[in-house]
Length: 238
Ligand SMILES: NC(=O)C1=CN([C@@H]2O[C@H](COP(=O)(O)OP(=O)(O)OC[C@H]3O[C@@H](n4cnc5c(N)ncnc54)[C@H](O)[C@@H]3O)[C@@H](O)[C@H]2O)C=CC1
Ligand SMILES: O=C(O)C1=N[C@H](C(=O)O)C[C@H](O)C1
Image (cartoon, rainbow, N blue to C red; front, side):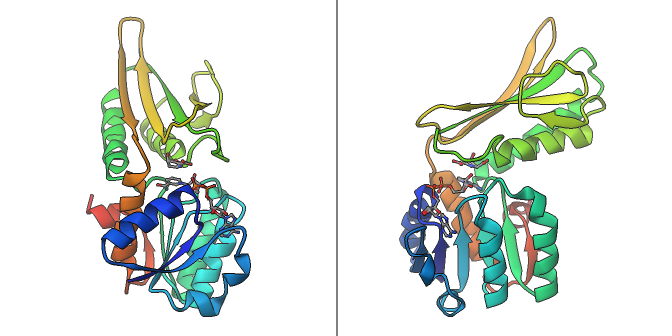
């Protein structure tokens, strides 16, 4: 496939390495110093675009891909308030879109484990659930997109928590997410159920960015020649 990389930072470069190993071509590398190259004509040379930029630029870039008729995989976090509008535009324009807060297979298994644990803990009133995420200091958004996905799944199942907050909280209905920024953390997420007598904790630790990048390339291969809105559940058949 011919791939356009929208964002050529830490993730763009990790994705390039894996895409080349798999025999794909990178035909466009867009970063904040060559934004003039981000044109419909250039995008249309690609079979698929992979977008890892910043919360401020993601929506513009995704809509440009829809307008250019190019399928787009997006991993940029921190713009979720506009998700409904973006999905609607994708359908209106007959585009192709796949977003994931986390592309690694390990985290997608962790998402399933989180739901299963939340079901098991649903009636255990002596436990309080809280979360922590740790990332590198260059990260622009907090809490992480992955932490938001985990929290929203817990809230759907929990009989006690109905909102998440990004600070310590002992208010019973609030799910507390603590964000820490420590170099060179690639991404650690934990969910902890605490009682007076014990704790149950699940944790996922990314050792590097290769897992995210491999998942993004897999997603790009999946959406090639498809139309519609997809998720990693479609890719991994969960
Ligand atoms: N979903 C997932 O699995 C993962 C998501 N991420 C997310 O991906 C995003 C990018 O992360 P990193 O690569 O670590 O950031 P980074 O800061 O290293 O790279 C961002 C890149 O985007 C470029 N850029 C800035 N504005 C742009 C624009 N308007 N158009 C095109 N490119 C532009 C920058 O020049 C840079 O090349 C973040 O939102 C992060 O949270 C990161 C890792 C995994
Ligand atoms: O910015 C990062 O680095 C990461 N961002 C994603 C998130 O916000 O969840 C995924 C991963 O944790 C790395």
